[in-house]
Image (cartoon, rainbow, N blue to C red; front, side, top):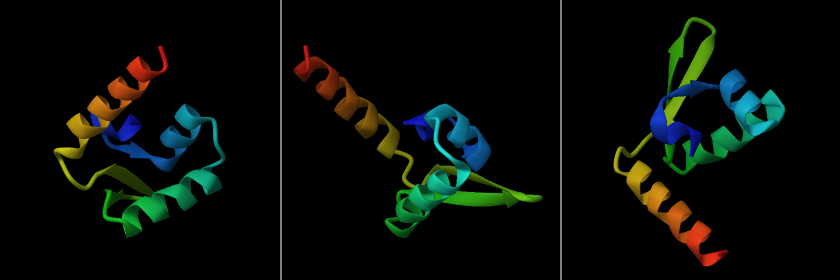
Length: 71
C-alpha cells in the first residue's frame, strides 16, 4: 500500500514496514517477478512504484473491504 501514493526506495520501505532492507528487497523481487512493481535507478538507489497505474484504487478498495468486514 505504501507504493500506492508515491515511489519509494528500499530504505524508505524498510522503515515504513519495520523490516530489514534485505527482507524488503526479497519481497520487492517477488512483486517485480509478478509485474506488480517496477523500479528506476537513480545513482545507487532503486525507486519502486506500482507497475499498473490502476492497481492503486483496486488495492484501496480491497483494504476498505477488509477493514469493514473485521468490524
